[in-house]
Length: 158
Image 1 (cartoon, one colour):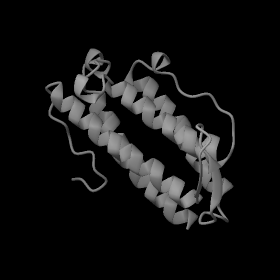
Image 2 (tube, one colour):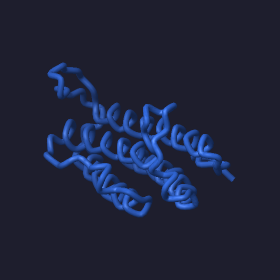
Image 3 (tube, rainbow, N blue to C red):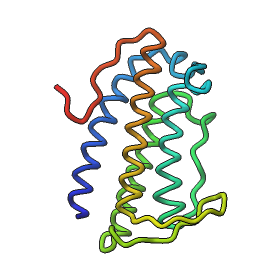
């Protein structure tokens, strides 16, 4: 199953690369512009949020590793965000290696608010990639609100 998840993550990387290539064409000030329709978040803050979701679920929650969250103020342009996602990719490979023999085994997880839930590494993997695609759609929509015409950033694209 680990090989299948690696293949699936490669598809995520391809779609992410298309999004980042598109984001490089945006004016830097537009990437930082808070949009009221998106809770005054910016394109870059959405992307950092996605990276922090990977960090929270893969590293902190599943592997119980202490790593600092990525800070919006330190990542004010697309090249910096791309570097953040290079670290996310390393985390994903560590995660898949860490759980290579137990991807479907249920584990007790304690959330920061103290609530507990039971999830498998496979479910966590699925959560973080679908969460990324949700926010990828928001980033594309945000750029449209800023007057841009987005490119196709889906997994299956021409």
